Length: 121
Image 1 (cartoon, rainbow, N blue to C red):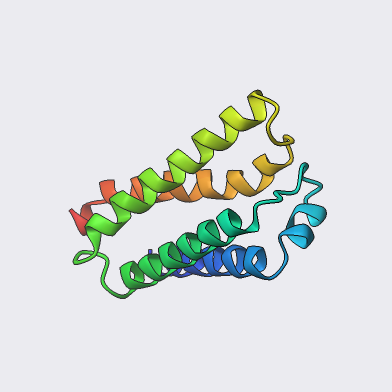
Image 2 (cartoon, helix red, strand yellow):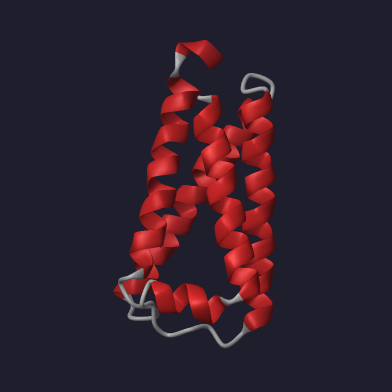
């Protein structure tokens, strides 16, 4: 499980930094439209993504002690996926964003399975 939380941390750090550096680049690579024009809110989101990455890193250091952070991570990722799906259905953003969100969905499921594992009960 240690490696899973490390990989979740790296995923968040990479996405967060990429969005901070070039939201146009990230959206272009995944063919997501429209590109957000309110960079302040993208930057706020990016900082939160990076902060969650630190939480996943801390979890990897001591899973039992940081169990509450696993709950927050799973719920946060499920909420992100949910709002993404709603925004796609409303036509606010193109369906290609679901590629990135699918990674969050996988991690959310893995986090829930980790919570259920006997090793950290």
